[in-house]
Length: 157
Image (cartoon, rainbow, N blue to C red):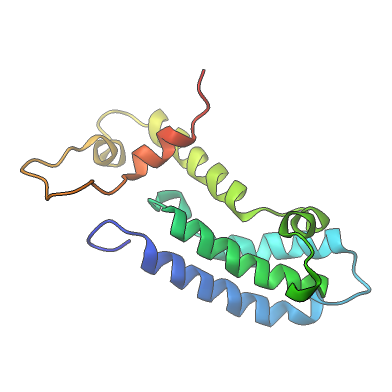
């Protein structure tokens, strides 16, 4: 995360790491003798997990989600041997492999939020989550905080 509270640099770095991991596993992930479901599991356990490492604490914006999905779809199309010109919907390809990076990102974030909520009130992680900065704010709409991202994602009950 950067000083200004954005996760752009972290997201780009993790995408780069995921691409490198994918390149290492291309012989397995593009092998036609292995079923698509097994390739999807291998992709999820090796590539996707390396792309989402540490994502629990990112204050993700829509642009970050789009860049993660774009990088994932490039790899998914390569695994399924489907060209963009063939106009196969992205959801169909994700269903064939049984993967969805945004769903995993949300699950990881909620899992971390549950851990933080169960911590004692004296714990520094919980204090950081509850911390409110003092002073005047700059003009314009404030950046979304991690807590706002999680609150928006929680189911209304």
